[in-house]
Amino acid sequence: MRKILTFLFSTIVLLTYGQADRAVKTPVKVYDTAHTVVFYDLQYLRDSTKTTAYLEGLTMLRISDSYLSFADYYAVYSDSLNDYAALSRKNDRAVDKVIGAIYKKERYKIPLLTNLQTQQTTFQTGVWTKLEYTVATPQIRWTLVEGDTVVTNVACRKAVCRYAGRNYIAWYAESIQMPYGPYIFGGLPGLIMCIYDVKRNWIFTCNGIESASSLRSMYLYTEKDRKKMDRKKALSIYRNELENMISVGIAKGRLFNVPPESVRKTSSNMLELEW
Image (cartoon, rainbow, N blue to C red):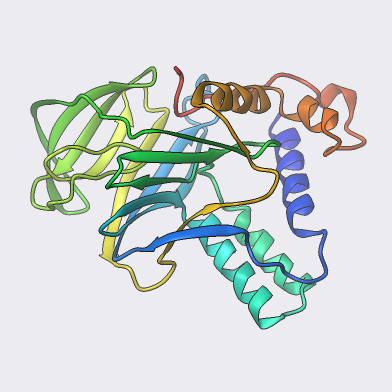
């Protein structure tokens, strides 16, 4: 199955970066410019039954006075390189190769943007279908409990919550007065330095905080084929595409000449299990 998934992912990258002779600027709407960035290492299990087969990535929480943006670092980096190539009219196969190599490092697939004034959060995701939905920013019901630890040399306190079908443990730093964290986790009296569900399927761990000096644009994608819908429908489609990745890809005309034995159901193990 690993070989099948590797083949599929390579095909997606090829379809994404192998079609144009010249880079085209990434279609986005920029909402603000970040002043601070918090990096979080990501570990997650694609299949919850394979408890040691972690995939690893790097995510970034960008913060401005009006917005929060959470995304995969390598996705943002590849967008930046692509836009540089487009604006400088670099010609392309070599550039595509570099961008494709960086894109392959992407692991976190749910970029989001939170408007701190309106308390609305927009999520974007999808495998074969580009999906988008906007909801009132989730208000996490935290319980502060006894416990302390150190994360990245910062003293932290413990809190727990339940969100979208998973029970979480969070470690937050009272010394860093930012009530934010990875994904939509926020509202604690300090920055969340580490958070994971109790079964350790998804683990986010802070590995650095700095003033934003590059990759500062806080944006969402605006492709013409991106479909906007409600959360329930979007996450249902996303789960179906994850669990039937190959058969849906074939049905949509995105995959060709796939061996019949490769068409099988796969695990989704989404960050959100309930909606």
